[in-house]
Length: 114
Image (cartoon, rainbow, N blue to C red):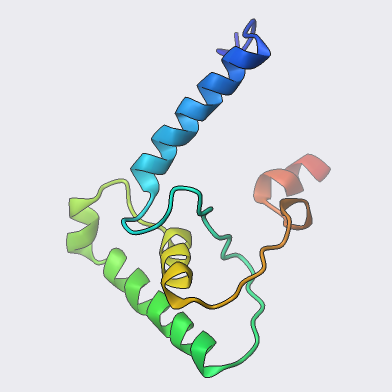
């Protein structure tokens, strides 16, 4: 039986809000606003420029640091590439545009279409 079954709309909203807040607190990197979504790093299109190339280098460097064995031991929840990308983009000031989720594919979405 679903834990959501029998809940009113208002109760469902409250439960979802609490779950979202817990997720954000667990996985959000320091210095990022809570409203900043995790950027999907599956496919990235960019205009070649020094500013973007610098951003990509910082992303690679920080991700390598975040996945260093000592860092992983300190933070067993792990830090993913998308979290690091969000942080680097926020700090860089590079303008971005995010593709709406209905235009992106996930493994779950691909399975559902079969």
